[in-house]
Image (tube, rainbow, N blue to C red; front, side):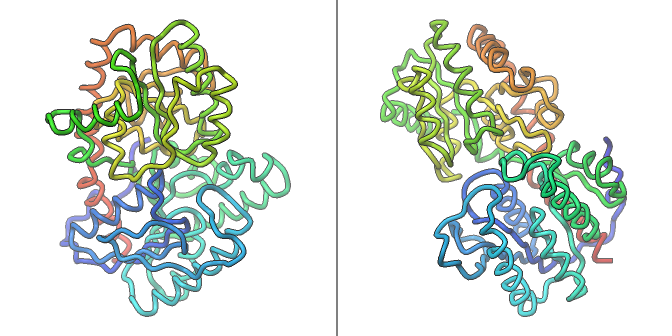
Length: 410
């Protein structure tokens, strides 16, 4: 679907804006939607805008960002990923904090991430008469089903769908992280095309770079030695959340098939939560010695860890969510094996190595085709890096966000 937004024709000078970002998550936690929030804020600051982020009480502070946190809740010490009943209170406290900060900060734009942020931002927008941009990274209702928080087509599903339909009608304009998400808004929620701008996740290709210097190569060798991975062994990497809808079990079952065929490979599965669960599965599959689970790593260390691999994996099975990690893989020049879904084709185009959705055997076979043909793998790696640089730069994304702001500020 082509971007039908009229924003491309805005030519007037864009003034610096005071932007209140609402992030209903434990920002910053080194994964997924957090990276999008981080990079959007950084590029807007680089372009001269003032950005203040209001978020949950937990998370990692970053020195270059202006972050304010809601009050903590004493009876739950930690919430990191996915839906939870405690989020109702967290969101109520976040709403109060957002109102407090907005009255003091006096924003020109409210930029709300995720659906809870869209709901809070919608209320503030009406109360303070400040235009709202909603940054949508997937369907709220579908995410609840993916996390097994609600059952598909039950009463709670219908209630969540009703609420989501009202949230997406609150903002002046909506940014979506993929063309597929835009189609969901248009086809399922009947949102007008003119209200939607597709702003794909992007990548800093100056940070995520292939191994070129002796210093980086040495650091990668040292990390490999620390992990006790033999030099002869082929390394395959994944980074992201660990859960069923993220395809973690499928990844491990594909790994087991390859190792059973005699492939001398090692899998580095970076991420959280549920590390113990998948370590147990790896033991049950008899591949524990061939899989390393580092857990969560700092975002700034991701290029080093991913550089250990010669192939990267994206087994995610959610059809509505974006997958920004794929762009990090691409910028590092790693060929990517993924399930064949529209969002993956948006990123990888003809250079993706695709398997049918949920098919562990086909997924394993596609990995083996790359291992068996290193020259083809290198050619794909070069092509996807060029594609990442050309189509998915944060500088281009920042200019697009500025055009959105200029449109709604008028």
